[in-house]
Length: 169
Image (cartoon, rainbow, N blue to C red):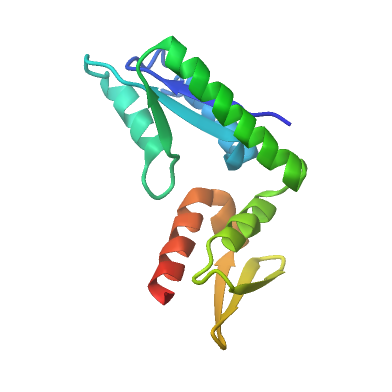
């Protein structure tokens, strides 16, 4: 069980030949392995970020496809936040197992975001799609999402699902 803790400051660091910093390359790999293992912390600072760092921060914290971030002011606060966040992540992971796929994580989140608390969720996984069938108040709503779209934009698809479900209630 591995977690990736991303600490964002105001400097991008040294760009590699690809134009990405070493941190961005590590972040991309962690996201590719399992987007639910990433925790993001951003330092509050007075000085301006450099342009590359602003672009990286925008990518990581994009409202639809990025992560919620926790801000901190100093190392003492960061230590406490990381400790609490890691503990909560560890509890969640140990209660659901450790060898979950992107699709498993997506289904787990789809089950948490129901249009009504007593909604029943039945899902089917095909080689190309995930079909979510929500039944509540005698109605059934079926939502199809391609597995490829979940893999390519995990948090974006979670956000789209949440929006669809909010519009139903």
